[in-house]
Length: 265
Image 1 (spheres, rainbow, N blue to C red):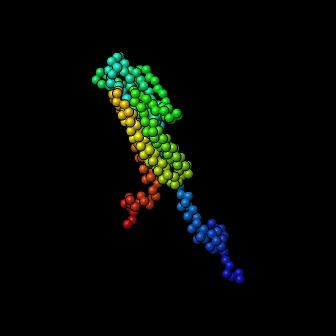
Image 2 (cartoon, helix red, strand yellow):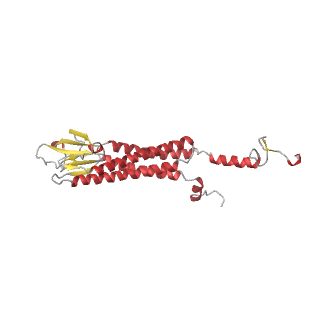
Image 3 (cartoon, rainbow, N blue to C red):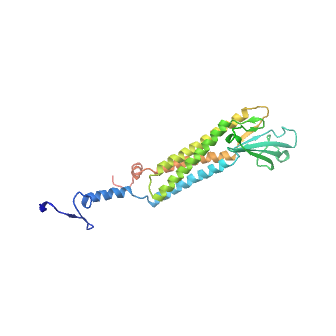
């Protein structure tokens, strides 16, 4: 009965039975599959991911800068509204607002309204109470719409959450050397950019609601540099997310789209 029993030795000198996975073709097949699963990204791929991550970090930085400042919009009275040597201008963001009293002599003679808010003057800043007690803010006898303001703030906070999640995915992808986390990261950054832009749109609607609440005092309004930061950040985050989505595509897709000219047909 021993005539039908034989052993097979592989190239490394290991001895195993045929079909048992300890040597021979079966072991080679499993080793090849394991190699394909644990294949690490190349240095060029890692460099491209780091470059795309740098673009996304710029968007995150601009978002944090814009959200933390209160120069989203400026509301200015006519320069000679009070018929004295001073006039008032207000500026606010997602969390607090400020009213500044400026000297008319410091304002550009060609400017019809008070401002800009960067001029030296006495300032009075307060945090909005609709986050705590639910009270609306009043500026120049005009009342804010707390629902719209809260919606803009919530959208901005959700975008920050998605940015943090996307950053964690990219850090894990770079540390593990795999592409698996690139698609979730691209989704997070694209969604974060969309939420940031939606926050700006909702905030603009809240400004229009504030202006229409009372017409006794004419006001000139303009979106300020904080909105420019946040709007630019939204576009940069979407571009960064698209970069991650492109980098997550398998190499076979790139070869089909851009075949090598030197390769055989």
